[in-house]
Length: 238
Image (cartoon, rainbow, N blue to C red; front, side, top):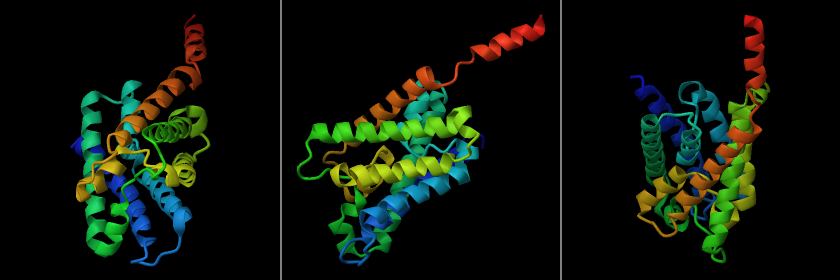
């Protein structure tokens, strides 16, 4: 039960993100007739993530993303065993969301949008995808540390909102370039449903590299040093 509850939270939070995001993409196909465009897709991902972070953050820490979990792992903020369980829960949540979207929307929409799989533009090279996904995930992980980990940011109490907005502006910036995944689970769920693995490796490598780099930089460079507190504690014992 100690592991089950946070893993269930990770499953549901990832479902929130992927169901809303994939559904928004499919809704914008001609077969469905939605007209919200890239802005609507960005808002769907951002709002869903913001809500999920606020709902489940107290239970699991609200990772909802294997890259984010990897970032917390390399900084020692999650145990390896729990990190592995989180990733499995995230992949299951994303796949379940993709499956429901496939069942709900017409096949013409699913086919036209490849079930919302984040894919590169025809002109984007592998280097473009890797660099773009690295930068976007770096920004996302930095926002997570700055608003949800750093005590100086947590007092502002905008963690979920700030994290969701980062995803939204990343999609507005990079959605037309790479699909703006920033999340291996978000790519994995629809890819598994559609058995479409072309380019898939890039959507694991770049987000994980970006998240781990951002986590290490924030952890070791930007976080407020603890030494003043230690010195104060020593002073009180004299």
